[in-house]
Image (cartoon, rainbow, N blue to C red; front, top):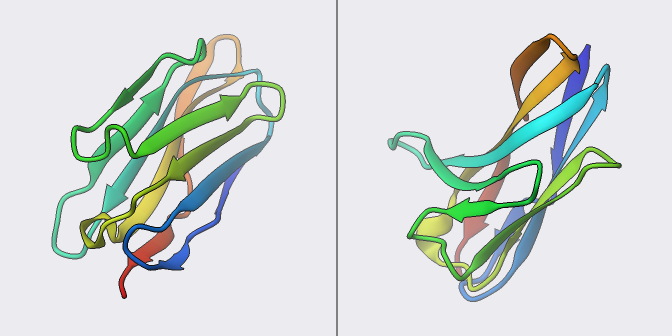
Length: 120
């Protein structure tokens, strides 16, 4: 069984920073790609950032230059550093990990979601 736990959300003023974390535990052979999504009320879930096992990254245009995704392949964790936050970044943020519980199996696991609110 694999569990993901997200932390680090909250309320921040425009221009501020937050760091989200996502920790995976349980039966983990390997973690492949990691994605961070967000979903604002009334909107579709959108991909914000991705990082491969080799730490190649991709970002949505809306967050490029402001957000940084990272991972620790030993601790099985991933972070999303968010700087210069804007009100339009307000959303629930979700990590999604492509986890291999065993060499022959790969499953997507989602974090529980964590709220980020950017407001003065």
